[in-house]
Image 1 (cartoon, protein in one colour):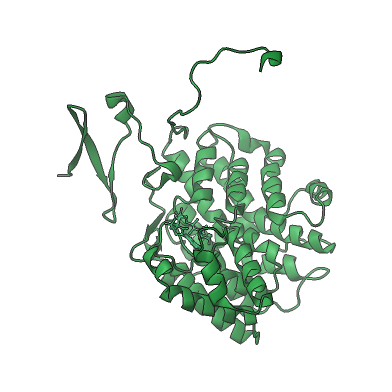
Image 2 (cartoon, protein in one colour):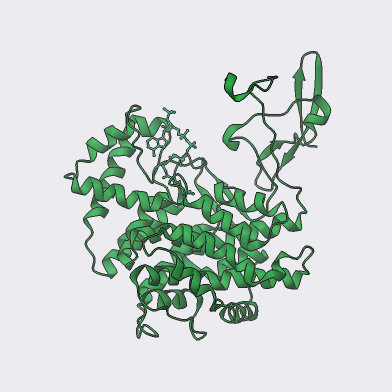
Length: 428
Ligand code: CMC
C-alpha cells in the first residue's frame, strides 16, 4: 500500500496521496490542496514541482542516468539513428523495419515548404539571429496548413501535422543558413535519409553534395539523438503549456524554440564557444576565468557548466566529449579551443566552488566544438539543438493531448499594492 503524506496547517491535518513512478520517484499529489485547505504551494522556478506524469523520458540527476522510453541514451547514441529515436519518442516503441520504412517515406514526402514561404526568408535581415527566424517560420506553417487549427483533429490528421513539422524543419533550418550566406536555397531530395538530406541542403552547392562524409552524417545523428528529449525542461514545459490551451502544433513548437533560445537553456551552446574563443584571445589563462566565474560580484558564469537536474554528471556530456575527440581526429582537425575546454573542465572539477555546488559540464560544453568542426557558424548552434529537440517536443505535446491535460495555469502569491483610489494625472 502506498504511503500518504500528512500536512498540518494550524490544528488541522490533511492526508495527501503519494504517487510513485515506474522508476520509484515519489510525489505528493497536491492537485486538490487549494480546494481542501485554501492554500497553494509556492515553488518559483518549479524546482520541486512535477507538472505531469509522463512515460517518455526518465532521468536521474544524482546517478547521471538518461533513458528514452526505457532505453539508455548510451545504447541509442551508439546504435540507433535519429529518425529511429524520433519514432521511439513519438510513438512509444522502436519501429519495425516496415514501420521505419513507412515513416521515412512519409517524412521524405513532406519536406518541401510552400514557395510563398521564401518571401519570409527574404524578408529577414541577413544577419538576424537564426533562432528568431526559426521560431517565426515554424509558427507561420500554421498559416499554410490551417487544418492544424481544427479542434478535435482525428488521429490521422494529427499525425499528418506531426509529420509535416518534423519533415519541414530541416529544410527551414538549412534555408536560414543559406540565406545568411546569400546563397541559393537547395531543395530537399527524396533519395536522401533525413540527416543526409539536411546536410545536403545545408552544405550542398547548386543541387547536391557529391560526397557527404559518413563521419559527418554519423556525428550529426549522434548529436541529434543526444538532444532529442530531456523531460520537463524549460522549452518542453513551454510546448506543453502552450499546447494545453489547445494551440496548434506549429504554434506550440514555435514557443518551445523561443524558450530554447535563452543562454541559460539551449542558447548556452553558442555562448560556450564564444566564451572559449574569448579565453583563447585573452591568452588562455583558465585560472583567471574560473576565478571570474566564482566571483559573486562578476556576472560571468562558466557557460556549459551546471544543470538544474544533473548533480553528478550529464551523461550526454560524457558521450559528446568522446565523440568530439573522435570526430576531430577523423576529420584531422586540431582545435585549440578544445584544449582550452578540457583545461577549464579539469580545473573546475578540482575546485571546491564547483564541487560543493555539484557543477559539471553539461551537454552544451562540448557540442559546439563538434558543430564548429562540421562547419556550422556559431549562431546556428542553438538551431541545431532545436532540430534535435523537435521529436521530444512533439512526443510531449502529443502525450499532453492524449492525457487530455487541463490548461496550464499556475497560481501566484500577490505582493503588490492593495486598495488605492485613482488620482487625476495633475495630482500625482
Ligand atoms: N558558473 C558559475 N556558477 C554557477 C554556474 C556556472 N555555470 N551554474 C550555477 N552556478 C552557481 C550559482 O551561482 C549558485 O551559486 P550560489 O548557491 O552560491 O548562489 C549555484 O551554482 C546554483 O546555481 P543556480 O543558478 O541556482 O542553479 P539552477 O538550477 O537555477 O540553474 C543552470 C541551472 C543550468 C541555469 C545554471 O547552472 C547555469 O546558468 N549554467 C550556465 C548555462 C548553461 O550551461 N546552460 C545549459 C544547461 S544544459 C542544456 C539545457 O538542457 O538547456
